[in-house]
Each structure stands twice: as C-alpha cells, then as structure tokens.
Image (cartoon, rainbow, N blue to C red; front, side, top):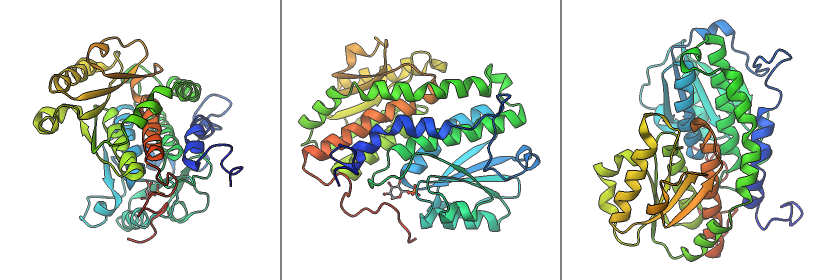
Length: 374
Ligand code: G6P
C-alpha cells in the first residue's frame, strides 16, 4: 500500500502533489501544427457550437465549484451567458433549455447519479451535452454528445483535489475553443493562444507553491481545535473559498463556510468575534475594477473585530501585510488562472488538520468517492 501511495502517507497527499501533472497532462495535445485549438473528443459540430445561446454547467460537490470558477472565464471569453447549477436541483425545477443550450456536465467519476440524471434530462429537452470527465468510458461521457477528458489520472482519496484543477483546466480549454470559433475574445484584448501559453506556465507555479507549504502545515497543527473556520473570496476566489470550506468539512469535520467577500457586510460579518479564524483569498493587485483594494478593506474590517486573518495573496502584494496574521504567498498569475494556485494551500490545510486530529484522510466518515444513487 505504501508503494501505491508513492512514498506519501495518504493518497490525498500524493494526489495533491500530482497536481502539476494533472494540469499539464490535461493541456497536452490540444493544439494542432498551426497552433489552433483542437478538441478531438468534441463531436458536436462547429455550426452547432456557433449557434449556442446559453451554457448550463451541471455538477455536484467539488466539480460544481470547478464549474463556478469556469463561469467567470467562459462568460468573459465567449460572451455566452453561463449558469452553474447543482445537478440535483437542475433536474427537478423545469429548467429553460432548448437545442441552442450547451449543457456541460463536470464529473471526476462519470458515475455520479445526480449528474447523470441531469444530463439525461438535458438531452430529453433537446440540449447539446458535453461531459468533462476524468474516467474513460464511464456512464456520463458515454451518454453525452461529446466529451473532454481531464487527464488527472485515477483519484483514490475521497476528497477531490487534482481532479478539481484538471476540471478547471478542461473547462478553460472548452471556453477558449468556443471563443476561437466565435471570434469573441478580440474585445478583451487577448486571444486564446495567449491564455493557453499562460496556462502552460501554471504547472511550474503549482510545483513552486507546493515547495513552500511549511507554514500552512504548521498553522493547521495549532488550529486542530478550531470549532469553525470561515473562508472569504471574491470573483474566481469566491468558489475557491467554497471549495476550501468543503475540504475542511469533509476532512476535518469542522464547521466551515465560504462567503463572497462582498457579501460580508450583508450578514456574515456578524459572525466575526475575537479569535475567529478567517481565510481570505485576495485577488491579484492587477485585478480589474479595484477588486484587490475592496478585499484588502474586508480584511481590515474583520481584523478590527478580532478575526484571525489567514491571507492568501500574490507574491509582492504588500498591501495585505498590515492586516494579516499569516500571509500565504502564491506565484503571480493572470486573475482568471489564480484558482489553480490559491486552492492548493487550502487543500494542504485541510489535509494537515485532518492528520493532526488523527482522522482518516483518504476515507472520511459518511462519504463515498462516487455517489451512484440519487
Ligand atoms: C462525491 C465526492 C466528492 C465529489 C462529488 C462529485 O460527493 O465525495 O468529492 O466532488 O461526489 O463527484 P464526481 O465524480 O461527479 O466529480
């Protein structure tokens, strides 16, 4: 068993360290000799894809947070409206879907019953269905019109890590492909090839980040008795906050919640009392619309009320320092790609806290790797 884990104590730890490969392998073979994006496994016609008027992403758990990250990028690049919905909610609410809707399911296993039922329902309503999946030949891709495989390799630990990064990567490739078909990126002053080049730099950045996690491990150990941990993020950092909270619930059985940082003043700030640990995922100082400054103000507000602030910020971002109890640095990267980095410390934190509590990291109580019942 030790050999299977490649020298790591748990599958989860091994899989976290496989993330640079999961992203790199998912990016492999997506461009032809002329540098154009190609998706061999996408058998929906180009005309059908040009006619798409709405994208609906359906998924559960971690895959749904990957979908929420993807929404920001897909809308930006394709200018097609994107909805993200939990598969079990989508199925039973009479969704407005037609043949110009592209329903994108995201599933590591390809066997999640809730997601499968959503895909079947979408097909009945006439939608085109694309599956983003990590498991060759599994049910969801077989029943979809098209599939874009993530190449994360088998994921054994119940809590998803490398599949999440691969899912974001694959949905970005899909978005860039649609954007090149539709010529929709010109307005944003960038092009698909440029983003692909930036994506190819991400695996090395994850590698670097993984080498600097000692401080995160240390704080996880002395936070093992925490009763509640909050996570704040904005823009693509918002779904990362949700995923960070999910990891902590799943692995360490600690009450955890992720919030949109902008929502803080509309409610969650009432939860802040002295000593309350709060992770904050800070947008890059280069972010548009002054989002960086807005989140820095949020940190200041919660710190003034006694929160213990654990701040995930880009290298070189000095604005956060005065208000942070702990600063966790991530390499610089374009705003939309940041989730591929900012989630990593949160995975490590949950893993270490679970370990510190002596819990079963790979098989948390009450959970299954793949839920094949509705
Ligand atoms: C289960 C797992 C989660 C996973 C979710 C979706 O609940 O415990 O880790 O995110 O299913 O799984 P899928 O295979 O569809 O990505």
